[in-house]
Length: 82
Image 1 (spheres, one colour):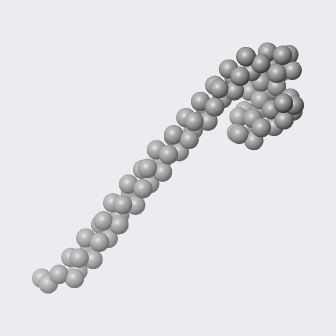
Image 2: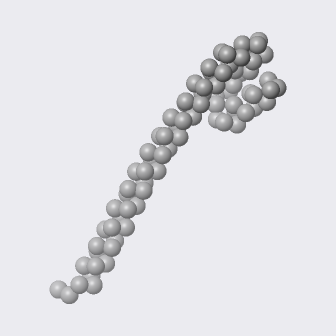
Image 3: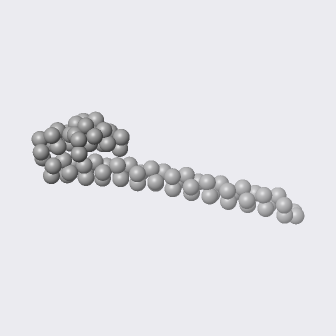
């Protein structure tokens, strides 16, 4: 794989430029095992970001469900005879 392509892919994946440069340099120097190790670390970082985003979405989903439930309850109260 071309070095510049590796660097560009890492940048496109949201990896810091410094990390992309390190991996590119490791590839250039033929230290593919080290480059692979660094890429796996970067992948773990991206997965953690994904999980954090998922937790935020889960919180929003919970709030949405609670609000919908409150709206439904309020509508039912208004429709029931006093």
